[in-house]
Length: 106
Image 1 (cartoon, rainbow, N blue to C red):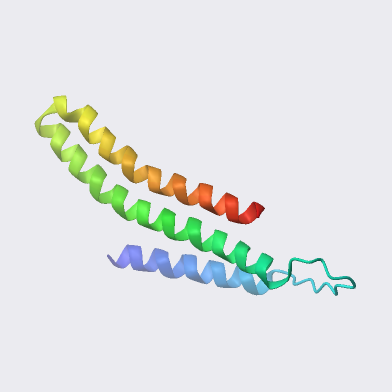
Image 2: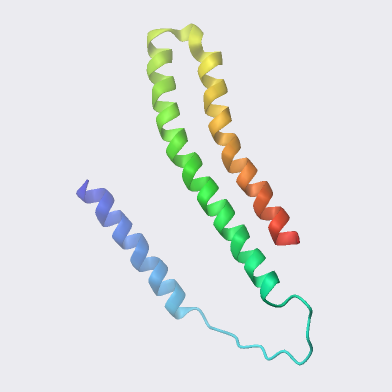
C-alpha cells in the first residue's frame, strides 16, 4: 500500500514538473477561424470521453479478470465464457476511443 502511494505521488510530481516546464506559446489570432469555443469544448469532451472510458474499463477489467482467472482455475472449460465477459468490458474502452475520435474530428 505504501509503495503504491509513493508511486502515485512520484507520478503526480512528475506530471506537475512536466506541465510547469513545458513552454507555452501564445498565438494571436488575426482572423476568426469559425471554431471558437465550441471547437475547444469538443476537444475537451474528447479527452474526458477517453479518460473516463479507460478508467471505467480498467476498473471493470480488474474485477472481471480476477473472477475469470479464479473460475478457470477451478473449471478450465469455462475459458470461453469468461473470455466473453472480459471482452465486453474491454469494449467500453474501445467505444470511448471511437467517441473521442468522433468528437476530435468534428
